[in-house]
Structures are given as structure tokens and as C-alpha cells.
Length: 136
Image (cartoon, one colour):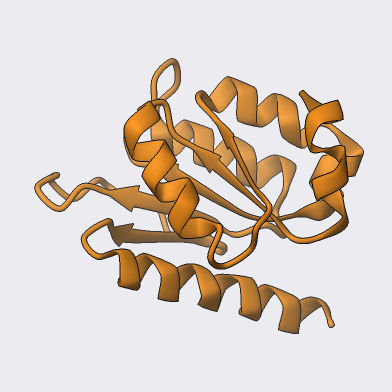
């Protein structure tokens, strides 16, 4: 899979972790307005494998995931991701009808209800720009 995305690794990359194909497609199109380099994976395990690649992890600027993932709980996945890549922010999208999850206060993890496409776009733009200002 990395061969297919190698050309995208020259710019900021957003990693979208979403197992629902329809929702993932809509979110990917929306995120591509912030940066054209959005890589979608369908599982936390696949995401963790991707960040093991030095080329990929060097270009990665943001991870966007759902609060519901299979195979591993969302909090475990996010904490494992932060342990491997502490400098990359993680945006956890929750459903509006979902009960609030217990959230650990960890730097670089942001939660938002996925209500409005405009709100998501604004949040992603803010996270990408704050990251570029921190490293500049």
C-alpha cells in the first residue's frame, strides 16, 4: 500500500481511520479540502502498521478517527498511537447521539461531535495550522 501513496508523502498527510466505507468516503472528500493527501485505512491495526513506516510517519500531520472502532477500543488505539507518535494530533469524532465517553486528558488528543461538515473542516484546518506553526 505504501507504494501507492509514496507520491503523496511529499506534503502534509492526514490519516483517516474509519471502517464504514460510506462515512469514510464522505469524510475523506471533506478532509481533502484541507489537504489533498488523505489516506484512509479501515482499522486501527492498519493505522498502527502505517505509522511504523518512517516515510509515512515523517509526512503524517493529523490522525482522524471515530470514537467507535473494531478490534481495539478507541481509547486504547488513541493512546497507542500517541505513544508511537506523540507529536501528531489525533482528532476523535463522536456521534451526536452518542453518550460522552470517558476522556483522559492527554495532550494532542481532541474530541468533537461530528455534526457539521463546516465545523469539521474548521477544526481540521486549525489543527493542521497550529501543528505547522509549532514546528516552524
